[in-house]
Image 1 (spheres, rainbow, N blue to C red):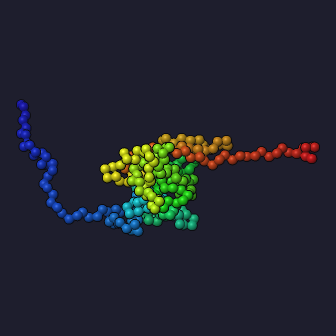
Image 2: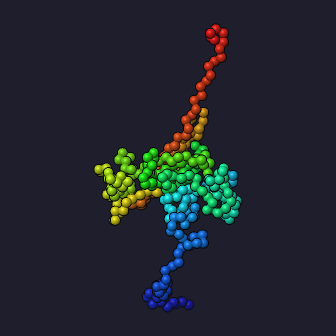
Image 3: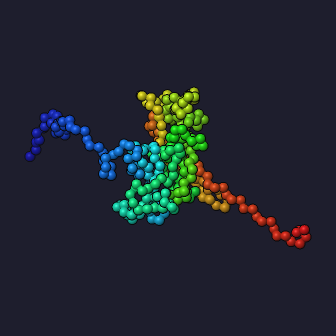
Length: 295
């Protein structure tokens, strides 16, 4: 027997999916994080681990580096906690790094007990970042964007790199591995893959840079000509290459990492080569003195 089905009136299914029109109501309650309502004042925004990176490390722990978000985004130092691998699902046994203790060590307690691994100058400037252990240099490497105003004289703003022998440090001083200033020869930075509104002048040297003639800057602008910028960076871990230290070879490693940009939005894969300490030159002692040669 052939079955038949009554066709619903046109638009009935659509009306059923949409349901009745909602009436306007009171504004929603503030978003909640860790119980209390989200704060807007930097002093009240106490979450230490908003932007995070996790890696296996020594002692059977997963190490978690974190920076603040919210009101402190781009103005945060970096913190560290560790979780036993066997308790990763529950988080039991989590410890935070207390750099102010004498000596500094991991302590049991909430994330608010964590203190910065280091602080940039003139002020904290971190948000998103990347970290990995480099097997060729036997060092932990951290990359992050920093936009100080004004930038320190000894290293410009951009993507900074620090290294350390352990997850907690001691961390080296920063080195700028990506300078966003326009570079005509390399076709890099502002005016080449980041849009510049070209507001810099002798009276305002911190403005966005003036572009070299012939740069593709105009083609990078959005419809409202927003100033572009950069952030990140994140490691492409499986691409790392290098040479380990030996009595005759200087350790070196080439790392690959992702740089994010906006206006225009996009990602670029960048490459940086890092050299380890120079190979020590051992001088052979002179031959022992014998007979008349000693005179």
